[in-house]
Length: 334
Image (cartoon, rainbow, N blue to C red; front, side, top):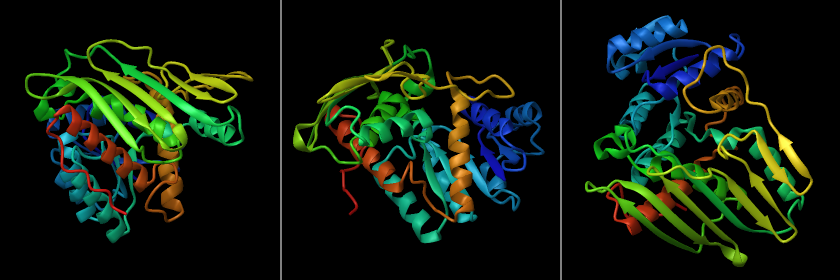
């Protein structure tokens, strides 16, 4: 039984997916928004029975088993803490928080309270990713030695991604998908060296960054994230015996080119249109959460707590190099 925190665009897409799955497996019982009128309109659109004008009211609702947190980035930490305090499981949009220490605190709290927590990096639940990783592990490309990823959309007119008080950041908004793919394909190994350059706004928000990483055994990875320009939005994985290209949009692909030929994937259909490209694949994330809860797990094997911590750790290091102030000193929790 789901409670939806925030009635924005990404929450709409996630709820559209929940509604497209079996009603016996996923029920949406409540939505909360800081603007009650917006939340009420959201509830009417999606047939949600209960509407709240505060996140606290939803946290106190005994019918809600798990909350989807789709509010603005700066609110993720305190909202997830509030939900934990009321015994709710949490699926929180990426980034889990804007600070490494806050991320680590939520991960600790999940473990201590034995409540499920997952950062909603939906790509990592996608069958396209899971099938590709299985093939790479079987030697599809020999030894993978280089990964290059680009993610760029001209988004400078959107306050949500460029204003500091709203949690704006190319890294937090889209760069996280690049880091997640590299982390996934390199098996969760931390790089030996990270070098980042980028462009900041006058208030210190990163709007473009290019990152190079060196891993053990000579493996390399590069990625570029931009809010200024459109980029190819594809990924290339190079091994000793061939190359794979994940076509645009690499974070929710419908085609992957391999040495054995193309592999096509169909995005699940939703009962109402979504705001973002291929958002129907959020269905896989929702089903993964259900599988974990039924199995009594407090984390997903696809997006583990260590995965979230590694990505936050690397983001923190990149921010430090760029001079972005969403930063605490990187401290890796062993």
